[in-house]
Image 1 (tube, rainbow, N blue to C red):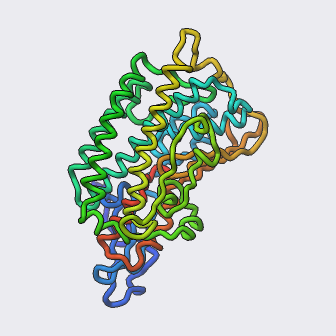
Image 2 (tube, rainbow, N blue to C red):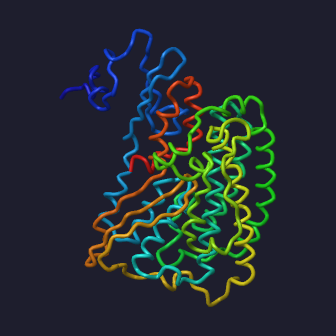
Image 3 (cartoon, rainbow, N blue to C red):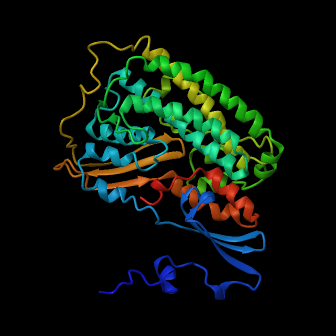
Length: 404
């Protein structure tokens, strides 16, 4: 038996993930650098093929294929309701939001959209906004690490941990919840959940105020992010950018307002946009600033949900969150596209049913991070290599929904 388990061959890497650029394509002063896939600055399993001229970036080629979620093919082999745990693993920083988008799509297919009890809808929005804040806290905190600020990361992760514990108390899982079900919820809010959430609100407000003062107004942070990675609005639209990346370029486009789904039309909140306060509209500072302001707006939404859930739509003994959950999901033959405003942008599901099976014949995901990754080469050309790290971090990528 051959004792050699693996033999290194120089062409192995080239065969498995070929570069777009070859050494013969480079000028004498240019270098080819692989940034990632196992590198803190790439925020996960992303590899960037970087061509540099000294400290300047000549070109960037993003390489995908290091996570292999295979979500779409898994979904085409499972009943509609059993897909929800797989949806959790797309943007694993915001599973509640992803579940909400997918479930609304199936309810649209079944023709039950807008017919569920308001308590169910308010709970869905409550947990989605809690998860939005948790996702943004990771984005803002790790972005501080990218620039060199360590302490704000600890503050934000501390508060995110409180949110994680609330959602774990609610669903039994720390990050991958399977809580929002087709036609309802896994369970009602635990007794005392509303009070515990209300106690967390002033803590989060104080942390956000500290981040605004110590990070956003910091002269070093401003120099590293203002006028860096400027994304013009027309370029953002052409690349299909959404969420804070698009709003950072100045367009107030938010599906919670545009599509007015669930109970969002009944809630008051603003849509923050980039205004070029420290540099140019659409720069790295603006994108980070929009996420900070969105956390404040999410807190406003949570406060209104708590008011409704302890007032007009308070818990009763008769309330059953699974009352309208179908035992078998077999929608009529149709194609639908459903979308929702996730923390990172528009998450959309194209689903095809054949009318005969409880398994979809086709599932396609419209992943916001894929579009945001695609625009990075345009933003990075001519920038410093160190600024490339700032640009990547400002996009808030999650590779689970890119390599799907």
